[in-house]
Image (cartoon, rainbow, N blue to C red; front, side):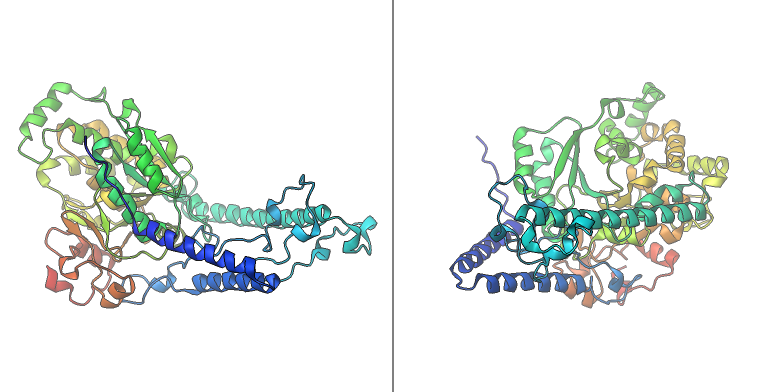
Length: 519
C-alpha cells in the first residue's frame, strides 16, 4: 500500500506561530485591569500595520523597462492577511444581529477601526421627530440600527460614484478604440476596475498523474505570491480527479477554488472538419518529433489555444495566471501582478520566451498571412509583428512566449477578433495535419491584434523555474530586494534559444548590465 505524501508549506508554519501570538495577546487582554486602554492599543497597532503596508513601495528601483515604484503596494481592502483581527470593542456594527434580545450598551462597539471613540449621536437621523434628541432616549438596538443605516447609505453612495466613473471610463475608452466591436474595446471593462481588486484567478489543468507536481506548484504560488492577495483557483480536468486529490487541494488551500470538467465536445477525438486519414498519416510522418505522433498533445494544445476560456468557471473572471505542475518561484512577489496589469491597461505577461521547432508548424505562417490579407481591419496599426517576423511579415521566426506561466486578460480571448483569428487557423487543420501548439498561436495573436503599448509585459522579477528554463533577475538590487534564491548565471533571458533579447530590442528597452555574458 503506497504511503500518502505529506505536504507542509512554509505558510502553514507561519500561521501556526501567528496563531500562538494571537492567543497570547488575547490572554493578556483578559487579564488587563484597564481593558479600554488595551483595546485602544490594539486598534492603533492595527492602524500602524495598515499604514505600513499601504506606504511600502511595491519593489526596488533596479534598471528595468518600467518603474517598480509604480507597482501597487498591498492594500488593506484587497484581502491581504492581517495579523491582528477584530475584537468586540472594535467597530463591527454591520455584523450585529438586531434580533438579539440581550443586546445592551455594554456590548456595542466603543471604538472604530482606527482606535477612535465612536460618537453614536452623529448617526441619529436628521428627522423632525428626532430634533434635539439625545443618546439616552434610544436603546442599544436603535443606535446600532442608526449606524448600520448610515454606513450602508455611505457605502451605496461610494458604489454609485464608482459605477458612474466606471461607465464614463468605458464610454470614453470604447470611443477611443473605435467602437464596441474592436478587440481593444473588449478589454476596456476589465481596465475600468482601476484601483479595485481585479476579477482574477490562478488556473491549472490537472489529472490524477499530476498530483505531486501540482501540489508542489500550489504551495509555491501560495507561499511566494498568493498568501498576500488571496486570489481563487480554477482547476480544469478532462478525466476527473480522485477524492483524495480533491481533499489534498482543500487541505492545502485557504482560498476558494473550483474544479471543473472539460466538455467532451472540445476534447474528444478529431473535430468533424478534420480528415481522419490525413491526420493519422501526419502523426506517422512526424513520429520522430517530440509528441509528433500524439493525438492527446494535439487535442490539449488546440483546447488551450482557443477554447479554454469558454468554460463556465471563467465567466466571472477577467484575468488568469496559468500554473503548471512542478514549477518553482525563486523570488518573492510582493506586489499584486493582476492589479498591476489591470491598472496599467496591459493584456498579457510572460516570464519565458523561446524558439519553436519549425518542423512542427511548417504551414502555420502561410495561414497567418492569409488571415492578415482577409482581415486587414483587425490587424492593429501599432502591432508587435516585429517580434514574430524578422522580414516584415514574410516569414515566421519561431519566437513565442511560453504559455505554461502566462498571465493574460480573458477578454482578449473572448473578443470577436481573436475568435476570427483562431477559427481561421483551426479550420485549416494545422493542429492535426501538423503539430501546432498553444504558445505560437497565442504569441502571434497578441503580436498582430493589439497595440504594442497595451500588449505585453516581461516579468523579469519572478524567479520562475520550470525545467529546463529559469528566469532570474540580473539586476543585483532587485535580486536582493526580492529575496531571490535563483542563480543569475542560469537566467535564460538572453541565452541562445530565448527570444527575450528580440523582445527587448523591439520594445527599445535598455538591457541590464552583464546581459551579454549569458548569450
